[in-house]
Length: 131
Ligand SMILES: O=P(O)(O)OC[C@H]1O[C@H](OP(=O)(O)OP(=O)(O)O)[C@H](O)[C@@H]1O
Ligand code: HPA
Image 1 (tube, rainbow, N blue to C red):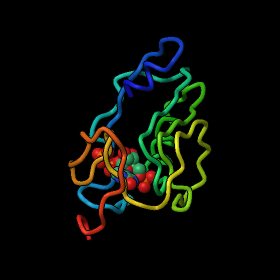
Image 2 (image 1 turned 60 degrees about the horizontal axis):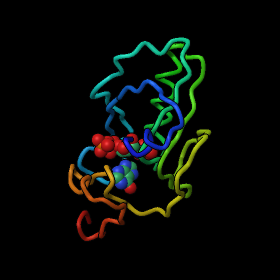
Image 3 (image 1 turned 30 degrees about the vertical axis):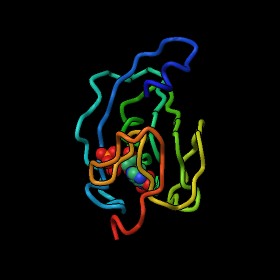
Image 4 (image 1 turned 120 degrees about the vertical axis):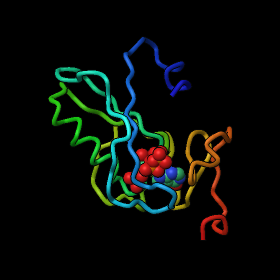
């Protein structure tokens, strides 16, 4: 997020939402839990959702519907990574950093069971770690 902000030409208010559907596994539970909601009232505002990864797309689809119910002026999506072969729902994504194969990746903020977020690069997690 800090890298993205440094690359933006102007300033934009930011807020954070924390949701979880993977827990300690490598497959979405399909149930999205809000761990922390926005502090900002987004009604009438233009919103850009910034995601780290779109895998099945279920999390983002749920977040988008949730935010749209708060009557923003618009909602667009930006994601660093997307797995096009796995996405189960049709979500229009305005900005995609990289389309990647169907492999579980970690690093640069992405975790497996709360581990490896601190890696400075993104890498494929060796399957024997979670198999
Ligand atoms: O497209 P999907 O299949 O829904 O997966 C993408 C979501 O999974 C990850 O969150 P996760 O639920 O693992 O929470 P975490 O960031 O706390 O690990 C990631 O940060 C995305 O929000
Ligand atoms: O490949 C992934 N890595 C880390 N977290 C994730 N959440 C969905 N897919 C992934």
